[in-house]
Amino acid sequence: MTVFFVQSLLNGLTIGALYVLMALGFTLIFGILRIVNFAHGEFYMLGAFFVYMLFGVWKIVGYLPAVVISAVAIGLLGMFFERTVFRPVRADGLQVLITSFALSIGIQQVSVLFWGAEDLSIPPPYTGTLQWGQFVFPYDRVIVVGYTLLILVAFYYLLKRTKVGLAMEAVVQDKEAAQVQGIRVNHIYLISFGIAILLAGAAGGLVGPIFALTPYIGGVPMVRAFMAVILGGMGNITGAVVGGLVIGVSESFLTTYFGGAFAAILTFIVIMIILVIKPSGLFGEVGS
Image 1 (cartoon, rainbow, N blue to C red):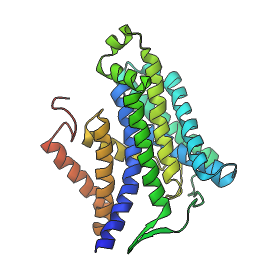
Image 2 (image 1 turned 60 degrees about the vertical axis):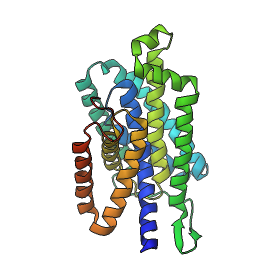
Image 3 (image 1 turned 135 degrees about the horizontal axis):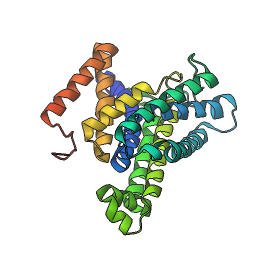
């Protein structure tokens, strides 16, 4: 029973790591730009496919360099879309939603043209297992959890110890005051959007070898990330991390014991109960 529990926990942490990276980007965009990006899942999908091409098809770099290159490329692509697609409509919340939905569909269809609609797979970069007593941990899942932790450390360092991070915090607290202090708000918007999309691309690259690839794989992670953001508290970074882990681990255990379909229903029920008790989310402020 203990072994079974630990294996389910590791699977949950792997899935939770994916949701955490997605939720961090999602909440960063909402917290700073005050927009909801429903194309976020498609950038996750592109991150996985970029790694598929660099590492699986062209074989020009190793797996981890492919993840880094892919994440940076996706981040730059996100900055391009922020400048050309989102910025002109940013003042209109409804127009932003319509634009993000249109962008989501557009990226999906272009991806179908490039890669088709059939399942593809990234060759496993790591084989074998890590054994600790009676516990057995697949290397690919350990890598996902380990590198997610490194990304989280780097992300928190960026926010709390760099000029860019402090400027982001200033813009969140008071955009007008930040402008008076000489902070280029549009520049911070651009960087924030790029970092958020980079996180989504990194998530896709890290878990790409574990799941099958299609142009439609971004839908479920995007919905789960949105749930994590709501559960943790809209715009709260710590809440996004905790929310992603809670959903990932809960999903793993519920799937193990009750099956996938029933687990999805139970996960929604649990989140609804939490939000009924605390409508602002686990880390959200009352009235926020």
